[in-house]
Length: 91
Image (cartoon, rainbow, N blue to C red; front, side, top):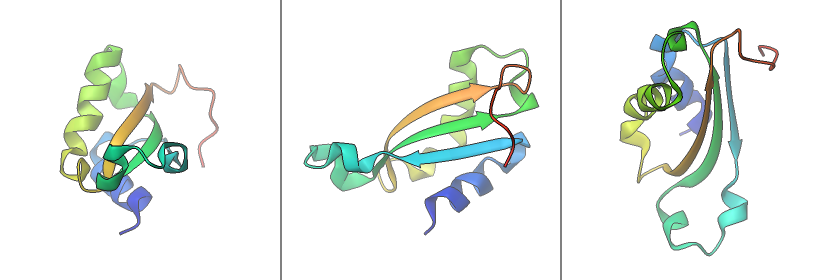
């Protein structure tokens, strides 16, 4: 499974203009939890986040990706922004 493709598929309802995933698993080698999924940093930019606070945005993402936790994702750092808050150019 390509984890980025699967994350994009699961986050499709958010109509994100940016989804970037950085694999930081190499920084956690030897960590007990690293056996059950990778460590990732995720940036998502979406109009769906307008009017939602940081915690609500993270919950939206965690809910969408819930089936990947403990199998493909052990740790996920999330940056969830609206287009007005974002400085990343869409890819």
